[in-house]
Length: 101
Length: 423
Ligand SMILES: Cc1cc2nc3c(=O)[nH]c(=O)nc-3n(C[C@H](O)[C@H](O)[C@H](O)COP(=O)(O)OP(=O)(O)OC[C@H]3O[C@@H](n4cnc5c(N)ncnc54)[C@H](O)[C@@H]3O)c2cc1C
Ligand SMILES: [Zn+2]
Image (cartoon, rainbow over all chains, first blue to last red; front, side, top):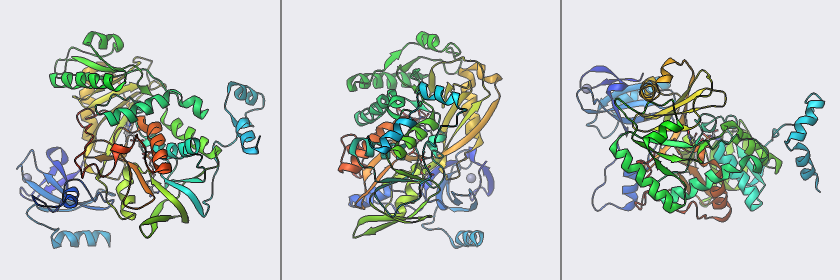
């Protein structure tokens, strides 16, 4: 069972209480953007074999979206963090570096 | 007669060959395919020795006479999703481009054993997709109408007919009564390993190299055109490159410098202990997220839905299996008494519209075939047929709508409604 810590509730949550929301830190594009930008924003995905930054929602809990850094090749979780970020925070990047050292 | 043709004749499997070998302690059987060493150059390199990669190579040789071909496989032949799936074959999709390629594929399955001289055990036992909500009744009736316009033989059948075809089913509910089903009488199953092995043997027979334990680690280009690949067994040159690696499509595309609209997730299946024959059709139940058939060995073969998150580990979450089995036990009470023997997972490549990608790419000479997701076993021969044409001629009527750029133009081939769990 995949277990993630909800940064809002501060609790370890089973995946059955969560909903996966796909790749995180996508840059949004709106009216006036090019076809290329829309295509990348809406459909193209990195889908890495390795470190993946991703969105999760604590559906059967506080209901809030949060982000996680997880390894898709090992299922190791490096940490979770607030969804109000445009890029992974330093402590998450440090945790990844440490785990890979 | 040239020597290779003579060799093929001698190697042919037949009742006579079985009898001949019986008289000499089976000492005369030869290897079905050889251990090839990579050459320095090929006309076409196919990456991935799953069903789709091998079928692509086979039809390149058979339909276009292109036999200077290598199939490179990082693991073992058929060890990806081709050897991990629940083998359901059907062509009752909704959209016209899907009907064209899936029905081409289903019809090729009918004659595959004869064509390959290899018994793939195609068993057109019939596939039914249960309607257990009003919404599904409307959905499947719509599909049945679409299929009749497409020339795909399917029909809408009553709950009584469902019970007649599959007596072990409880059609009365309580939670999910069976309200009818979409029935494709010429759908069914085949032996998954045999499909891969049969194509591999036929490819080797045409002089192609099937090279296992050879991972493609890079794609070499010159002026935007492919020139070769780097592999764990050295660099190999090629004029054209076909990437047919399912769950690893994004990883390989990235090495060639482009992205795909694909996410890789785990899909699981399980089988029970073998029991006496009790069910001679395939049943799929989308509302309760499960499907079921009985293998020739007597095992009940069960599959469910995918995990929600990106994953490359070939194992999924236990709660999915629990949900699948819990739901199926209600419709098939007989399952409640069975022990489960094995469970496994595969990494499937899912697109936004649940339809595959067979396409040229931003790199000249590189073609991709991926995105078959949870339902590409049924498509192996049709996909190989179409992909070979695409690689050989640069275009194919069967692949036209399946380009990787369709998302950009909003030209989705939406099968997500018709194929929620359905494989
Ligand atoms: C549990 C499960 C049940 C399923 N049930 C059904 C079903 O009932 N009906 C149905 O139609 N479909 C079903 N499917 C889907 C079906 O299995 C797949 O769509 C199909 O087998 C894909 O075939 P393929 O040849 O494209 O991929 P694969 O068989 O996965 O082959 C791809 C190959 O590429 C190799 N590869 C990857 N990267 C590299 C590299 N860099 N270099 C060299 N080689 C590489 C891999 O090792 C692999 O062998 C199911 C899938 C799963 C997992
Ligand atoms: Zn929470």
